[in-house]
Amino acid sequence: MISSLPKWVSSLFGNALRPNARVMETSYLSPHLKKIRFQGDISSWNFQIGYASVIRVSETEFRNYTIAYHDTDNGFFDIVFHIHGNGIGSEFVDLLKTDDELFISQPRGKRFYESPIKRQCIIGDETSLGLACSFLPLLKQGLHQFQFIFELDEAHKNVPHLLGLENCLVVSKKTFRDEKWILDLLPVDVADLQNTCFVLTGNVRSVQAFRKVLKDNTTVKIFSQGYWLEGKKGL
Image (cartoon, rainbow, N blue to C red; front, side, top):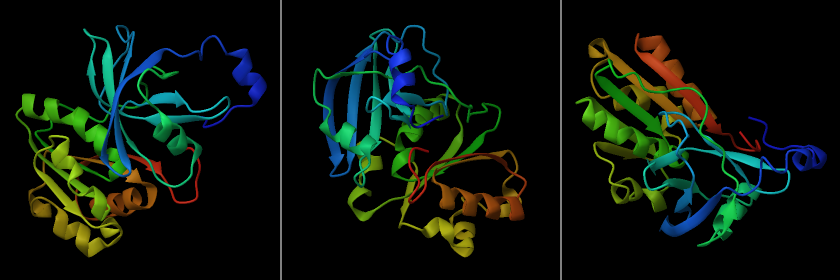
């Protein structure tokens, strides 16, 4: 997804990018994690695990976010935002308040869920919490064995509990960069990982390191997508 467009292109598509969602309510789960409930016409939206929506955060800038929960019948959905640094997306989200209106696209992207795989392990960081929330109902409904593993800052370690996530392991930042730590974190011995799927999202370097360990030591199914990278704008 292009993170920015020239102003003349944004103006050309102005009608298509007009506000289509309203902020219903906001809450801070921690100083840098904000949950917002939006209302809009989502009756035709296609919600799939792994899909993301584009939010217009300025006249020319756009950012991708995963919908954590949706209620199509009542026309509302939740997004959990990680507000970090001084980026334009973080600043925009931090200032959003009840009744503000904005443009949010229909979800699109690649699917991360295969129901026949009975053991599922979802790996990520603060930016992955919304994806985890969208996963949980399907994992429970499908009677999967599942494990969430998050590398979180100390201030955010209680947030998975606040979101109602189950079977969570929380580790310190950059744990996913260490091969030995990754092998120790695997839910069972690598020899017993048949019929297992790993979903890797969050920091690009962590995703790459975890994926390499899995590729080198297992034959599991892997879905992966980096959501952000230090010094990189608009992933």
